Image 1: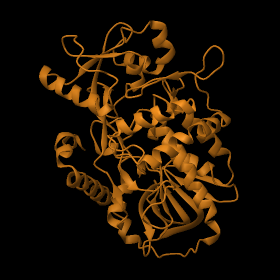
Image 2 (image 1 turned 90 degrees about the horizontal axis):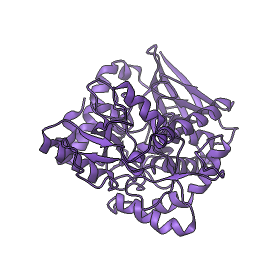
Image 3 (image 1 turned 180 degrees about the vertical axis):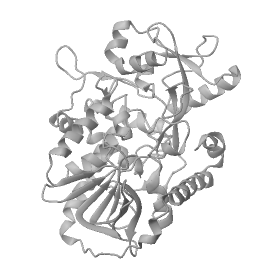
Image 4 (image 1 turned 45 degrees about the horizontal axis):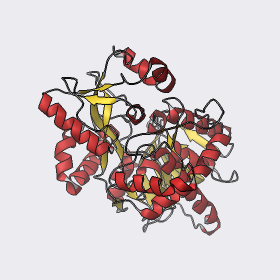
Length: 439
């Protein structure tokens, strides 16, 4: 038996983009949020580095150029412009929600710098900025009477007819199947890290939205643009890789080969640094290189990177005294479901935001600390469109066939195959180089 429910809006995913989209809806709208795991277990929660902000009008051209250059000029100039112009408003809203950014002694906001940025424009909360932002958004969501959150509920399909989305098919922990109907659906399911053995992502984030989009004929864009982060903590333990934030290099840490020699400019774009590390590992015959923080004082490390220091100590590395062994790992997807600057996809009443969406901000390679900002800016714009069109929505209940969703393992394998096959079709060289590490 299929359980049926009806809402004004369904948000799939509880990262920064999904949470902010829900919070931006007027409180008379009934919103359901579903997530495959705990509400906190999104990649937004893991973000260490920070969130960008335009510091002054004079910085606009520089910020714009930094973003375009990192994206190899394949970015959408309009999307980049919108993101930058809305950055100060987003920061004000986060602060109003209780987000605490690190500040100078005089109380002013403290900015740091990361790779490919030409100046200091990144706000942070120690080295756990994502946790600070996401936890405060979660607290706000839990206070809203119009928002219902259900954990451990997995979207397995979209309910569609004639290129119109009417809801979501989902399965809970007890294997109960739900037909969840809504006037509008927002996909905020993150990326594809769970398909890789070496990834900074949570393992349950497996690109389900992209597989469903491929089956439903929903337009995708640049699914082959997958960012391999240059520096994750080398470990032989199974599971998610621990990220050594770009901001560590932004504050002066250097990369060394097995002989202790520096071999690359650490502030180049991530893809360039990643390729340099991969080549050096091959030359050295090693499965990692080293990241040295010797230029930072113990006080600076304690202040800026306490979480990283603690995690490295757990692996036996005192970053105040020795370099950290690091290795590249899958980190972020620049492509995704094609969306416009309001999150609209090629299917009516279906929106995509955050890492799930490809609105052109990132181009071929994301500039450090743009992801949280991009997620918030376009989630808010999607919520505005949904609110404005609410009175024009014509909804109906499309029948759902229960027998199609009873073999979860077969569905999981099919989705993984669909996504990997599409990546290979779009960029076989990347597939051969990195996807042989896929699960």
